[in-house]
Length: 122
Image 1: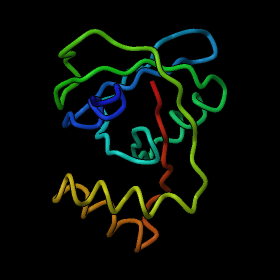
Image 2: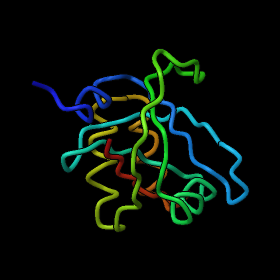
Image 3: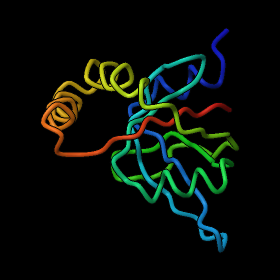
């Protein structure tokens, strides 16, 4: 039987909702991949990383590319992975999302962007 994490990573996009310090929800569609018994995503948004450091409680739900929910959100826990995980997660993203994943890998090689890897467990 598939775990909730595996089912979540099987979707093309999930809506990751983080919370600001004042409790305001910030929903963001992200591309999930299977990683370390959970789901991982790559992000360039430092705000999302800061919010997760302040409060690792998030919600996740399958969604469309634009963030329209496909099912009810589920409570989850997010953690920022160490930098040595970023390339492994980027490889998985590039395999699942060929065009955009490859672009992210090229941008990392050029040093054009700073990335973070986030692990999500339900």
